[in-house]
Amino acid sequence: MGKYLSIIRWPNLLMVPLTMYLMRYCIIQPMLDYQFSIQFGSHLRFQLPDCYFLALVMINVLLGAGGYVINDYFDRRIDSVNRPDSVIVDKTIPRRHAMVYHIALVASAIVLAGIFAWHMKMFSIVLLYIMIAGIFWLYSTTYKRQFLVGNLVVACGTATIPLQVGLFEYLTLTREYGYEMLLKDLSFMPIMYWMAGFAFFAFITNLIREIVKDMEDLEGDSTCGCNTLPLYYGMRVSKIVVVVLIAATIAAMLAVYNIWLHESLTLIYICVFIIVPLVVAAVMTITASEVKHYHRISSLMKIVMLAGVLYSVLARQIIEFVV
Image (tube, rainbow, N blue to C red; front, side):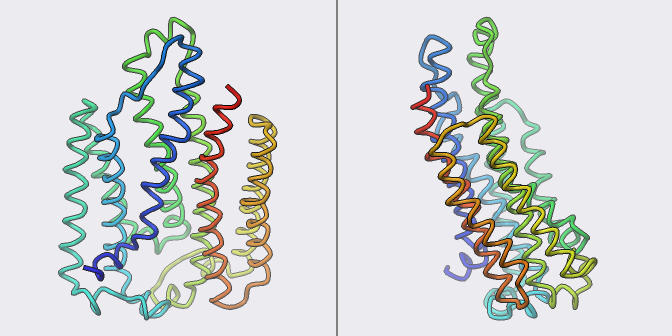
């Protein structure tokens, strides 16, 4: 059983339920309990039941797991050069087993999507997740070998995690309370503004990490005909792009603070846990010259991404305090 868990990279997958539950209970719930309930004049509750929210989480976990499996299936040659010790398909797991495993994971996700769509009375949801599964397949076979396309696909996919939470909570809340909220000239759109902020952070930090990983995997990618940014423009330009993206991330964090948050704990948090590590990552990128250096930068970006998600815990306290 352990070999099947290892191929889906379950430590990475844990970020999906962690992010989704933190978005729900650390951002949306305090907004309902305090901000919206006070404005509305009575207590507002989640309209998406816990069991269906769990189904939404599992859809994303299963699709992500299926994506990891199919990616390893098609990346055997690249991985045998970049990280030979981590190759599983054809060594630990036969190729046909990997394909069956992928189909089972994706099929389970689509079944859950059908149940979720039935509850939401939006059967286009099933088509949406079928399309996402197809994009994961195309990423593994085509997109990741194309210039920046694969990087953007991964970054966009990660950004949809908080957006999905916000969207489906917004839709169910609007169905139940929308008319009365409209009469009071109120809106649930602040939920989506918060989710958009987390989504942007997820997008840009994942894009940085994906480019760094391409720099780390330069040798294997070059032997397999990939057209990544480091191979197309070289390492110097790639380093410049990473540093510029890091600078843009820091500027965006400070702009959000100055325009909307104005809260000292937030400033301390983003400086200590986001800005300082990003500056370190930028310096490490400039001075990097070996594969192990880029691997360390990639690991540091994981910590930054986790810190961004965990800010929601502090945000919950701020929302309660401010209201």
